[in-house]
Image (cartoon, rainbow over all chains, first blue to last red; front, side):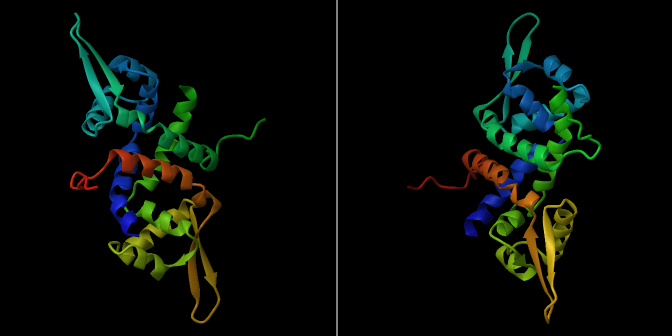
Amino acid sequence: MAENQKLCPMFEFAFELLGKRWTGLIIRVLLDGPKRFKEISAMIPGMSDKMLTERFKELEAAGILTRNIYPETPVRIEYELTDKGRALKPAMDKVQDWAETWLTPPDQNNGE
Amino acid sequence: MAENQKLCPMFEFAFELLGKRWTGLIIRVLLDGPKRFKEISAMIPGMSDKMLTERFKELEAAGILTRNIYPETPVRIEYELTDKGRALKPAMDKVQDWAETWLTPPDQNNGE
């Protein structure tokens, strides 16, 4: 168990980070490639810009995404996953598989 | 994005649940097979019995583990993962892979 004990805090950190509201969806959107603030915002209609800003800060601090600033007029800013961020895909896919299989919403009809 | 929108709450629920302190470790311990309270408690030294009781309630409510009561003297109670709980293994493995690769603690020396 010694190894698990050591891994546990990191494991929990990963889940805590990814379990925050909108974080999973933001990462999914960015797995398609770098995007501008307004593009991401438009792709996740229920989320406020304030919330998106907050999540960007957290994910940037965690080294999961970077902000690329292009010195154009007007300045262009794009958000992009780092290697660390892109490496999350298999984990997110597996959690999503589990959620899809086992957390089917009760209001979903079994229409074929 | 419509599909992601619908999946998002379930995905977040999964991560929120598994991101709680000790939950990942409790599930890992139970992936080895059913165990009694004291056995689990002994395998996770830093965790209080009160916390373990709380986590058991949450995981039982989420359908991830069951409590088996054997009418012996004294009564024997074992905690066991359900199919839903056991199905978490691939997701937990992938998150752990990511955490091991990308969240290496800074105090770990690279001694070879």
